[in-house]
Length: 172
Image (cartoon, rainbow, N blue to C red; front, side, top):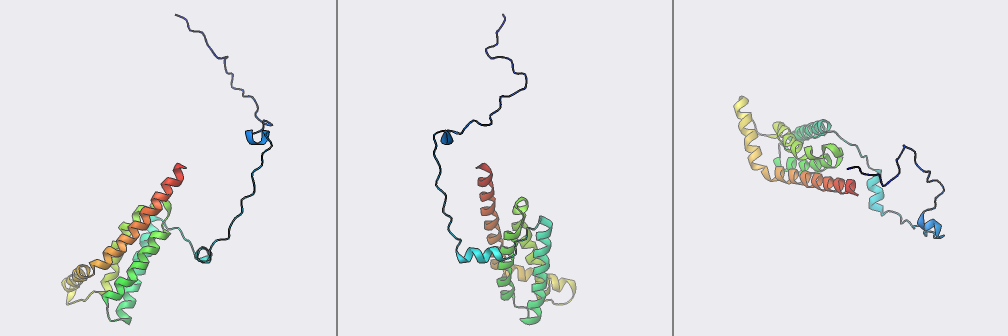
């Protein structure tokens, strides 16, 4: 059985749509201008701060190197105070999560605990030799787990919120 076409054949040309008014323009309506409010002072201050975007590798190097340097400074200035090291770890983990690139957001909660362990090497008590250093490192990891969890949780939450905002922005 033969079926007849209901539409004329399309040869690839389109009708021009230039000059066709939009519905609101056809009626002569105009939108009122939107009054923009100036941003609050806190937002203006935050916009002046540096805003680097780190890749996964760059974020790992940044966080690990900074935690190692901070571990060395804590060892020299505060006599290997693990509490000072833990307090310094939380802002570093927050900065790492904030400065990560959009595509590498989910690597921030993975990078941060590794950097915590690397930075503990100069801070941890070392007995004698390699086994003493390892024992001091494991003891420091066990006793400072609260700071480790706090920094990792902060980096994870920031990465998760940024990821949700990114997905919602793409869907719009």
